[in-house]
Image (cartoon, rainbow, N blue to C red; front, side):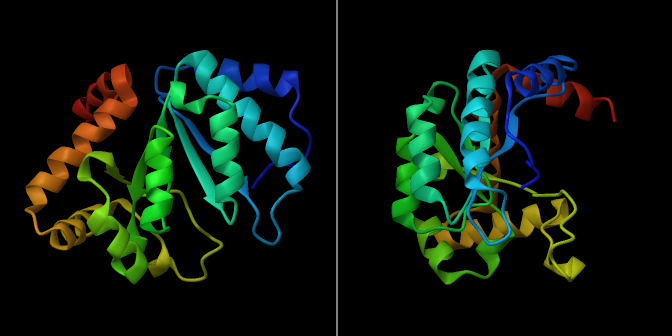
Amino acid sequence: MDIREPFTESTYDTLREMALSTEKVLVISEVGLDFMEGAPDRAIQYPAFREQIRLARDLRLPVVFHSRESHDEAFRVLREERAYEVGGVMHYFQGDYETARRIIDLGFYVSLARPLLRLPHLQQAAAKIPLEHIVLETDAAPQPFKAKRENWTEPRHVAVVAETLAELKGIGVEEVEETTTRNMRRVLGDGWSVIEKYVGAQ
């Protein structure tokens, strides 16, 4: 949503340097395509998305991608750029079960957040998606485009999302917590130890 000029080799080099500047960079995120009104020109979105996937593959980091009104094209680019080699997560999933299956078939996890509490079609999909392919998220960045703060998704909502998912699947919340955490460990690979290092230090 922030790109305003064509992605160049210099842009790539700058992002690569930034990613390598600290061990805290664990994923290439949040990248993707956005076809909603007011989004940047698609002619500059496409190459930027492709180059960001290239960066992820170069650094062997997973991808967390965003897709608004662009699923067919986002999935096509992920496939063409071999994003499945590093895997990752589809951020803030709000689609149906068939869309979830396409994501999983691409080698990605489905990330659920606060929309699970209010969207019936998403609840139906979540009930069918294997827990082994689901992670939970906070989407904790400021969201000023939402007029009311109470509509934001924040870390405090993860617990209730986990509880809702457990109810939909008819299982205990502990199983949801354990499995989705294990799934995120798989996404991050060696990066999980970095999380433990910094969380443990607090």
